[in-house]
Amino acid sequence: MSDPILPPDSAPDPAERTPNGDPIYHYEDAAPFELASGDEENIAAISDHIERHVGPISGVFHELLSDQVHIDVHIVAPSADFPFYTLVTSGMSDRPMHLPAEATPEDGLPTYLELCILLPSTWPLPAPGEPMGEAFEDENLYWPIRWLKILARFPHEYQTWLGYGHSIPNGEDAEPFADNTGLGCMLLLPALSLPEEFQELVISPDKTIYFLNLYPLYQSEMELKLEAGTDALLDRLEAYGISDVVDPDRPNTVPEPA
Image: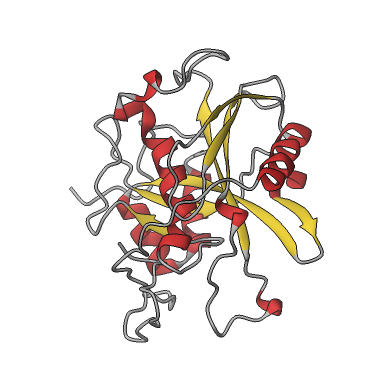
């Protein structure tokens, strides 16, 4: 994978930069397995924050065995104000991320982060009270949840960080996430369809949790972002009317040459 993944105890190679000038990072070995349990106070604070700004939590995907951090995924069902499913992690912010050594407070990089993803109201999520696992034996349905969990654990496994505008491919070749889509990369940005007040949660003077949304991309879209910058990609997505709600069949805004 590349951008923005950094191997433990290493620094970006200045020669490995995008045409836009951003460093391309790679990662190698993950940290050894470390059993983790959830921080109940942190979970409660995040749950309250979700319900205050988005809506009542209708279900939670609980982890039975957790490495590094205990990741749960909270589900908010579609409503009149937010006509889509909102899925939000808790647990990623139990530990601080590993920011670059040269980072300063003025850089505004997030030390604590949680992730969300927005799914259309037609996505076959289990109804409240139904078993949560059976609905996701099909990877065509499960991949958004899988990637929430992968990326929420990622900074702690690889001693790195994630933040605004970072893009992460599904392997070196950005393989499609599942058989039902050609999307194979993730971009991290705020969720435009959720309230601005949702984007951060102040826990204490020393801890503010930021929330970023996962935007699935095609490989060619990620390449445009690497070459010309995030704003260039956002202009293209806006021109095509691409929203922050996942659409596995959406058009590619940077079509490959015929």
